[in-house]
Length: 121
Image 1: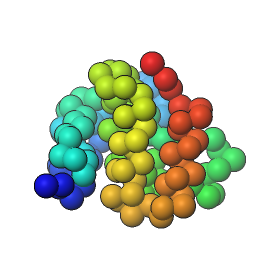
Image 2: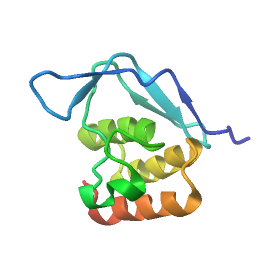
Image 3: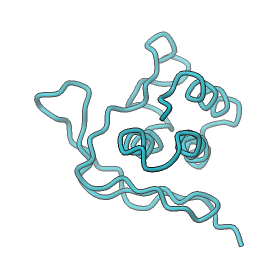
C-alpha cells in the first residue's frame, strides 16, 4: 500500500554569520515519499537554498523563497552526502515540491533544470 507523501518535523534554520547565503538546520527534518522512503536532513546540516539563477527568480522564486524551500533542504543534504543516486535525489526533489503545492508544470520545469544542470555523482 502506498503512503501519501509528507514532510515530518519543522524546517527551522539559522543563518551562519561567517558564510553568506548558508544556513544550519536547527532540528532534524524529513520528507517521506509516496513509496514510504524516508529522506532525512539531520540537525546541524548546512544548506544553501535552491540553486536558481537570478534571471528566473521572478518566475520560480529566489533560493529561500517559494514552495520549493522545504524540498531544497532535503535536496541540499543529499547532494552533499551523495548517499543515494543523483537521479533518485533529483526525483525526490520533484516529488517534494509537488507535495508542497508547486504546480505540475512548474515542478516539471524545475525538475528538468536539475536533471540537466544539477550535480551528478
